[in-house]
Length: 438
Image (cartoon, rainbow, N blue to C red; front, side, top):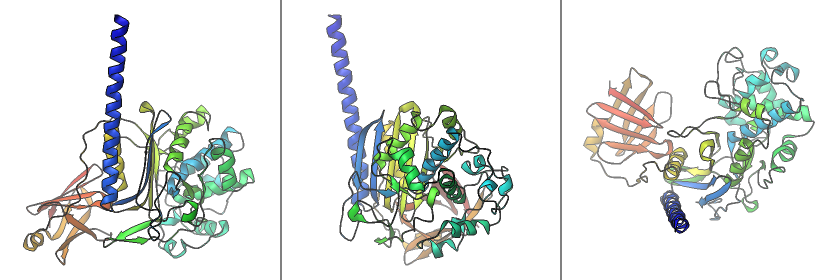
C-alpha cells in the first residue's frame, strides 16, 4: 500500500511539474508573439535547463525585403559576446604554458602607449587604460570598410591612454581587438582557425564562426532599425574591425551550449575558470555578473549594427538563456527580464503597447528642463506636432508614447517617465530618478 501511495504521489507531482512547465512555455509564447505582432522585435531565443533545450522561438524576419523568416539555425552577429570566446582562447594558451597573464603588451605591440606596463591580465579585465577606438567619432567613417591589422593598430597607437594601467576598470573594445591579434601571433593561426580548433569543433558547434558579409540565403540575418514606424536596414560593420572584440556570429542554441560547456570545465582548467569569473569592479575576463533577483548569473551582452544579444548562465539553476535580436523597437533587456520572470516564477505582466491620446494643453504643461542634485544629467522635455520628446544632456532626442495622461514610455531603451506637478520620475533598468522642473 505504501508503495502504491508513493507511486501516486510521484505521478501527481510529475503532473504538477508538467502543467507548470506547460504554463511557463505558454506565457513565453505569449510574450514573443506579442513582440512580433506589435512589430517591436525580431530575433531568436533559446533556453536550456541542465543542458536540455526547453524553449526555442524565432520572431520577425531575417530579411524584411524578401519576408524570409528566421529558423533555429539562423545566425546573428553577437557583438561583444565574442569577448567571452576570445578570453577563453587566451586562457587556453595560459593553460598550455604558451602565454602568461603577466606577459606585457610590449612583448607583442611595443608601440602602444604604456605597453611596457600593460599586462594580458589587465587587458582581459579592461584595466589597461587603452582607449576604445570604437568610441571615436572617426569610427563611423570607416566602420563599413575593410581595415587591416596594421591600420587598426595605428589607430590604437595614436590614441592617448585614459588612465594608468591597473588604476581602475573601463570597458574598451581595443583590449580585445589586440587580444585577438595576440592569439594569432602566439599560435601562428588566424582567429577563425583558432575558434574552430579550440571551441567550435570540440563542442560540435556548426553555426558559430568568425563573421563575414551577411548573406541571408546562407542563413545569416540582416539587422534593422525602426524610424518613424518604418524598418530600415542597418549599415554592416566590416568584420575585419571588431575581431576578437565582436566579430563572431552564432545562434542562441549554440551560445547556450558554449556557456554550459565553459562552466562544466570542458574548455578551461578549474584555475583559469576561477580567474575568468573573479570579478573586479563588476568585470571578469570577458564576462561579468548578470544577477536576477536572488539568482546569481554570469554572462555578457553584445551590440553591433542593429543586432543586440545577451547570454547568461545561472549555475545554481543550471539555466542558460540566450537571445539574439536583429531589430528592436523595445528594449531587448526588458524581453529578457520578462522571460526570466516567467521561468523563475517572478511576478510579471506582459507589456502594453497601446498609445492613448493626451490633450495638447496638458502636454504643454510637461515641457521644460528637469534636473536633480542626485543625477548628473538634465532632462529636456519638448513638444512637437502633439508629440512629447525627451532629451538628456549631450544625447539625442527620443519620442515619448503616452500610456495614460501622466505616464509615457520609450520602448527601445526601456524608459518610463511619469509626470507630476513640476516633477518627473524616470524608471529604467532598476533606476528610479526623481527630477524637478527648473
